[in-house]
Length: 143
Image 1 (cartoon, rainbow, N blue to C red):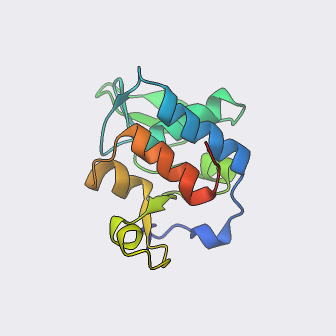
Image 2: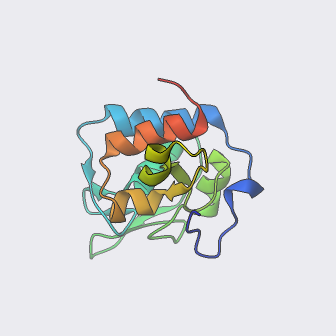
Image 3: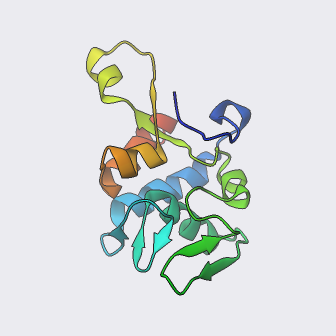
């Protein structure tokens, strides 16, 4: 199961596939953005969810972005997960699924055990490209 830390589940939302494709494409194609862990943005480093916020903002989602003296950025007050404004813009949870677990994929069991964004970025150390490809596969976005 996806860890959602008390936020609504993926099942409660209708994903906006066009917007999710924008996020996936940015993760796959932008080679200039530096990947970080633990926070949406820390200085010039972004986790995959921080990239999601930046993509949403660039495409019309209104978010208050505040950089702190310590380098950590808050988006609508959030440091670690998607703020509600962005989660709703994409139609996903605050820590959305970005892929299927390796064990399920290898077993071919079809159980769709989900890997969350923070799990992929921070725990499994997936690259931005791997996360973007996972999003494409999980949501059936194609290439």
